[in-house]
Image 1: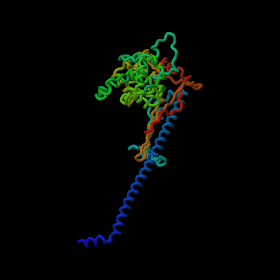
Image 2: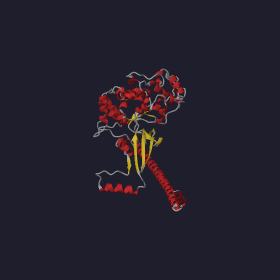
Image 3: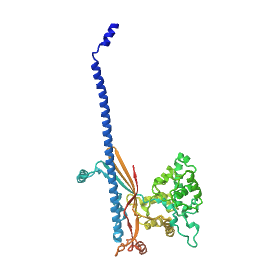
Length: 444
């Protein structure tokens, strides 16, 4: 056996085969690694290209939305300079310049005729767009601006003789009584009232929410917000300013002492957690708005405007305004006054005018022409998605009307007094929109 073993060990036949097999195995491993890396690199390159294409699509969509808003501005200004033409074109018709969403490739309905299909197909073929695009423009001119809470020492007026401390909305504590909103028309009182109402409603539906937010100090929340955005040292007359200052020092966090420029800043303010901000996001914003659109009023904002309104009247309001068969649009504050005073009889005309005047002094006005928009442009290419969310502001300014401007014709059911009130000053004044500007851009 020993001799046989020595023979076997000295036998070198088959060594070359083993070396070749080993080399083949190593080459296969190297080839597999190279192939895998090549595929990964190709996928990465494709993803980068798709991402870039999706980004270009989204940017194109945003540019298209801005172009549509500019067309709206031009049409609005043209009508404002011609009172006769303005009376013939309702704001809802003008809004179609921007409010119709755009989708590419353009979807074709099942009932579309051959001509429509051919037109859409030709447009798709001639287009240079690769991928899919969705663009929506939303009117968000229905929210109070939280920056109206800001106390600017440079704009503070010297109290006239006979004025009391109550004339300053930044002095004193927000009235917590249930009927306070009926008399105190201010942004901080409205914020206090709506926030408390929304929290109470949420607590009734969500026990976990109630446990997490059992001890909310609404007054302190409002004071912390005011302290964050107001000028340094401007709230010395506010009894809650000292506590707010101590709160910021404990964190520690230095207040901005300037207006909010993004909704994300709210999350830095002490006491304002994600849940509370989510509750008020449809009622308040940090963006400027010349007026609140009456045709976009929410139920809570309606309660602020008309504190005595009940749930049945709120339901009646939305049925009246949003009737799908015959909607009633509030094109002016007078249209809204007629519903409150004549249709629902919630208050008399004198009380209504006084309340609207209080809101005007607080910096909140009402109308029907939107000037604050949210643009969402989403580009898709294969599995890549690129979304741009832009908040667009279109400032307004009062100007003298065009020379020789004529008053609009009298409506059939309009009295002489109503006609005079509606047209008084129309020939001499008009509202002009300035160029739309992006005030915040978010990338998702």
